[in-house]
Length: 199
Figure 1 (cartoon, rainbow, N blue to C red):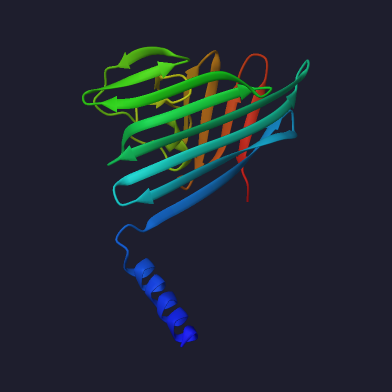
Figure 2 (cartoon, rainbow, N blue to C red; figure 1 turned 30 degrees about the vertical axis):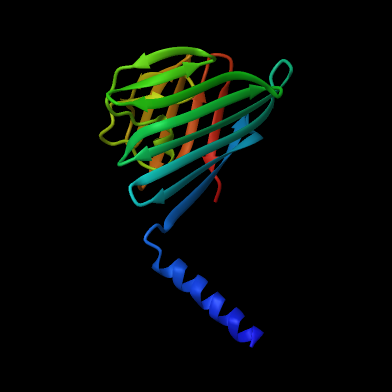
């Protein structure tokens, strides 16, 4: 009798999973970070799609040696409804200490942004964050919202299937092959870091 009850419960759980209208579709991409040819870290991009809602999470861990050893962590999470940003959180740490904390929330026809405790407004009715670049080639996107800075960035088209934007004295190039992001290159006067899609 106990076995029949367990089989029945298992069958009901499987049926509930199969019939659930809110099935989430998840995708994870892993990029290895390199400086001067040496692996210095990893970036993991995850997208979960559930009906009209999309959640994107980026986790980056870097340990690099410039003049001294530098440890950097970045964790951002964003939620979109019908491809429009609803809220986002981006926290960066250097040597374990918070360097930047940016929170973004849609408030009707504008966004309220808290950058390290200071509140400002971004006057847009709908935003797309730069994190979308990890999952979609931005063919028709002219500007994106930088989750880690709380600012709008102009998207430029480079050579075929290459898009870039500039911020904080850096150029960030996104290189696509067949619509899939294969490489991100962050170019600064002091360094160049490249993230390559792990095969």
